[in-house]
Length: 193
Image (tube, rainbow, N blue to C red; front, side, top):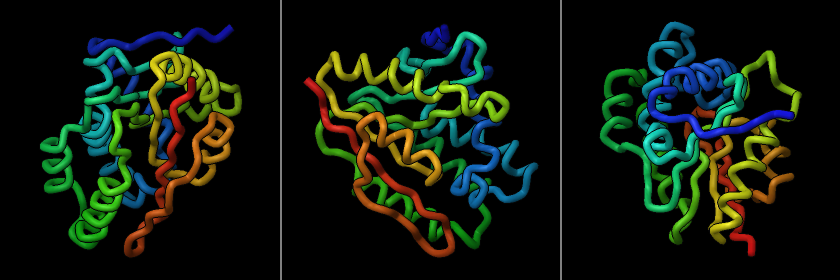
């Protein structure tokens, strides 16, 4: 049986390595950094800026073998906007900065206004995909979220993953697409009693 546990700050690097492998062919992420070297250098900055606070809040979950990782931001905890701004400033190619700003604006408009759990990243190492790891990671976190009576939210950066999210009660809120960028789909899961 697959065991899911919390990953603390000392394990952040190992957990983010799983995400680095998992997102290597993600449409949005690779639109940001189509060059492999740029991707390898800069995607970890996005992980830290957008979801790194999950490690400090004990809401980053991994499989025992680190083949899967989910980084959740609990209610009241947001991304590190300063880190994200710095990342954009030094790593994003000039031709897409306006489009990226459009994505960020629309994402901010779509965030739920009530306290909610935000799934910043969920990823499974490519060699382990199709083994139910994503399901188990979501089940684990959603059990906690449901016990708190809270809603959950995510932004799907890959259309292939939306079936998984729908199976867990998430519904698309809208589609966001700016300039020549790929679609991004915010999804919401109401609180369960």
